[in-house]
Length: 125
Image (cartoon, rainbow, N blue to C red; front, side, top):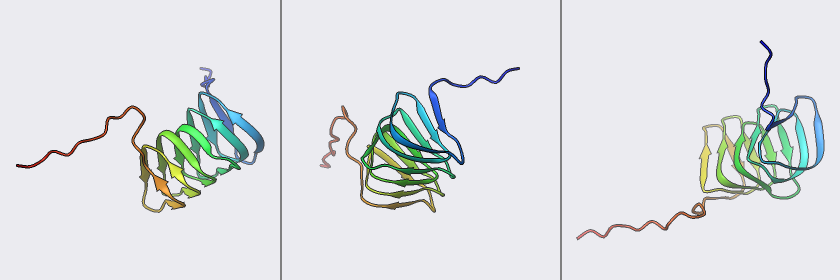
């Protein structure tokens, strides 16, 4: 049986270097080195062998980091840093997770998701 690939998944393979500007609606898997302006993406996955260097803020819906990211990240949904992941830059996302061993060298802010109503505290009598 032939293996089918998801056409909405881009890949930077191990040992490859890509430089330039990227944007897309699908998923980008980075196993190699990416030096690019990432204007927008659905999901960015930086695998343990992946290194991303972004001169401007990375914009994506979801960002998963198990490798290294140099640059600020702005995610509209979430950012998850795995145990092997390192982010050198500020992170802004409504949801943020950091596994034991993962690192962020920068500021993390978790503003309310767009469209979320402010939460009210109940008053106790």
